[in-house]
Length: 305
Length: 163
Image 1: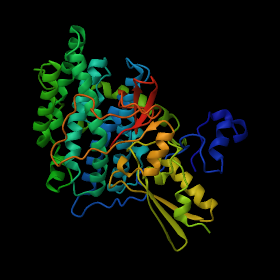
Image 2: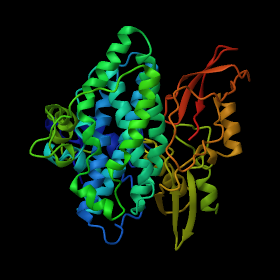
Image 3: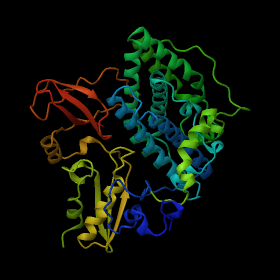
Image 4: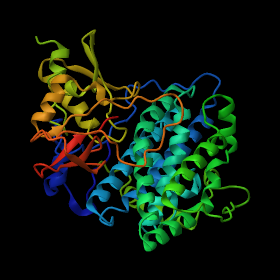
């Protein structure tokens, strides 16, 4: 059994009041759980026939890492949003994405046969093992940039998840089915703020446009399939990201028109030796993000929460 | 001995304690075979932090009623919809000052349209009944609720948003 989270010198459980919480035999909890159980408990997670388990796991990590890493960026807005209502909204969106990440990471551990849990993937992988698109990891920026990145991310992910609902992997299809409902709210929230800022004052317009310009170099990457994705598209498991570009452009154009914003005309950010986020090549911001995300779990690797 | 289903149906939602899990529509199935009770529940939202608590509360209630082997399973599909909240559940929500949801959006198979202005749907104030209300935020204190304000009585109130 794992050791409890305590300072090395704390000694027996009598010395540490937190131990008595964890050791309590009564199953009713003092808050939302002292431990997290498998979010896929009881779900049939066998891979569809003819699908390579390692490929399927990698694809789950791609979609899961996008959600995990972007959720972490959204969590950094806690106490920093311009209004209390937006604070709550951003935290809620981050929570939805964290929920998607938990299911997808847990699904990866079943698909590759390693039996690794969500925490193993989130806290004990190195930077080059993360497969999220670079857009998800970008520096937090100002509120205009938050709305820009949230608009791009949710419009793209919603278009992907709508198609993923008919994937041949029933677990991915079910995750997508739930995710679509959530992402619809996220996209509407970002789009309304984009209009409010873009069609607001000269200053809010300038900040919103600057936010879009800052994130746009990372947009093309969203629509380039990694070789693993291409293999899984052929097997009916994955959605070809190139196929959602037209829908994405249409939605963004609708927002730009209503918000009097211009579609940025900037060059795409190149990868390194042909690899971008999906291939484990990240921007400098990723290292700092992971340091924050993983530090506690790595300092107390056997801790129970 | 009370049936396992009857016991499971008494367990309350940790975030909306005026509702049972059955009222909320997250209790999907209760079955008994060979001395094991299997309960299936579904999350309202993917990130619902209350799932572990629901699971524990179900096990606790069933063990207390004499069922020693209890297995709680998660089902993800079909995805939960506010349409599954029972009539009793809707009444209890309104009595607790939370506006119950209207009909969940029906979507055709094409791309989901962008909604640039807040929905025109009128939510009546659960306190004074006035239909003159406004949306403050689509995201409330929990993932499943939005925040509104009544322009007649001036009170803010929560609304279970349609999904």
